[in-house]
Structure formats: C-alpha cells, structure tokens
Length: 73
Image (tube, rainbow, N blue to C red):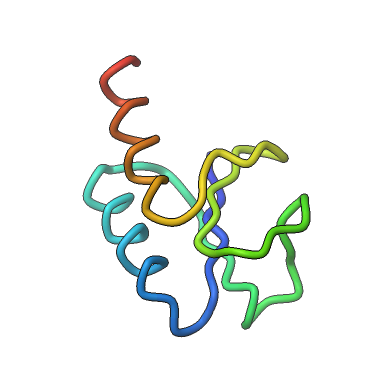
C-alpha cells in the first residue's frame, strides 16, 4: 500500500489525491501539518508518494508514475 504525504493548503496534494482515488489506487494519507507522523526520509515538497521507505515521486509526477505503473502491470 502507498502512503501519500500531504500538507495544508496544497493544491497539488488535492489533485494527486483525486487522481489516486479515481484510479482506484489503495493508499493512505498523512497530512504532516495535522499529524506527528513524518515521511521515512526528509523531504521538502508535497505531495510525496512512498511505498514503504521508498520515495516514488513528488507533486503531479505521482500521477505519471501511477499511469505508467498501471500500463506496465
């Protein structure tokens, strides 16, 4: 399962969350402004998608990652 780290007042966070929901991707959201949980590595941009401790992408590049993953299996 993926973890999407987001922040308050983040337009790209909302766009990526919508895309992941539309794509029927199983993920959980962690808003770093509302939670004490932090990403497994230090990051400076949101949203950020992780699989375990592996960073998969930032921003709307996450959408491209998911599209590519869904076409390659």
